[in-house]
Image 1: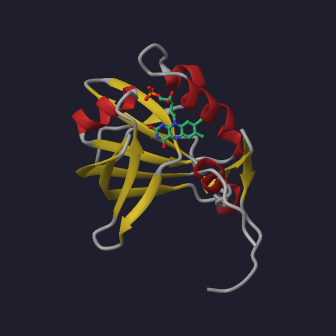
Image 2 (image 1 turned 120 degrees about the horizontal axis):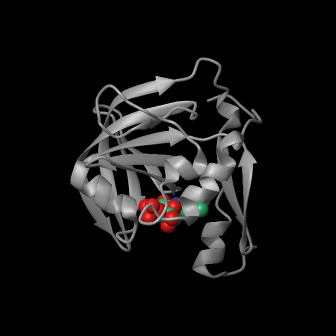
Length: 176
Ligand SMILES: Cc1cc2nc3c(=O)[nH]c(=O)nc-3n(C[C@H](O)[C@H](O)[C@H](O)COP(=O)(O)O)c2cc1C
């Protein structure tokens, strides 16, 4: 039997979800934001989306440049995830603060994060306003993978009560 709970408590019991660093650039200003709201929307064409609140500095950069890069993170990037999820690019230069390295991609001007094991370059094809976030739907134009990447190092977030904890994935329990 299930007991009725608050909406927040219910959503926080959903399985752990991945966290990403999204990088963007407009008129020479680079920034990185920590994002949990990421989804795949289409296979062909390859469309993904990131949900950003309009108050984020990154929101303006992505809206104006119509580009972003989604960077997968592992536990070595946990400190950067904290900085990029707490500080705003309005008053912190986050590539300097995190000592991460911006790298030029092949399709968009938004920088890739060198230390990230997987980065995808996206061009915004649609904006969808949903409640208090805007989803920037982007076509994936290029993907970059580090050879030795182990997907099970990917960082996941799980809420337990009022506290959030980071986990790593990686226990195989069946075949698709
Ligand atoms: C784990 C985690 C997940 C987050 N997910 C999102 C998200 O999906 N969308 C969003 O707009 N903000 C999200 N945030 C908040 C932003 O990362 C935070 O407000 C950041 O400081 C905004 O940076 P900016 O102003 O430089 O863009 C998240 C923060 C954390 C710590």
